[in-house]
Amino acid sequence: MMTRLGAVPPLAIVVAALLLLAACGGAGGGSQTGPLKVGFILPLTGVFAPNGADERDGWNLAVKDAGGTAAGRQIQTMYSDSAADPNQGLTDARQLVETQKSDVLIGPVAANVGLAIRAFVAGN
Image (cartoon, rainbow, N blue to C red):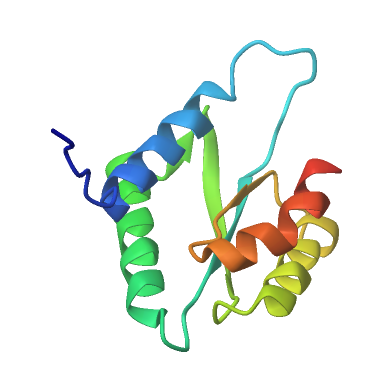
């Protein structure tokens, strides 16, 4: 008999991401100061906009519950709207990492965007 697992609730993903961020701190080689810049790629417009809004709201709630900090650093979230478009998602990923200097990149929600940014993320 096969069982079917439902989709992972957005809040569970957000909590897991926050736990991962907290684990990234600690006594590493270099001292990180300033805010922890988190780039978040979401579909805030288009057909998947409700999913993106849920992810954003869940993230904001989790950050608030964590006191706005992770690893002793203030969390600064920068959102980008991929509209679930692979080309826009790749542009967003590049801008968040190269221009806005994100320490962490979260997302995307849409699989097609994930496939589009895969090589870029692996190289950074």
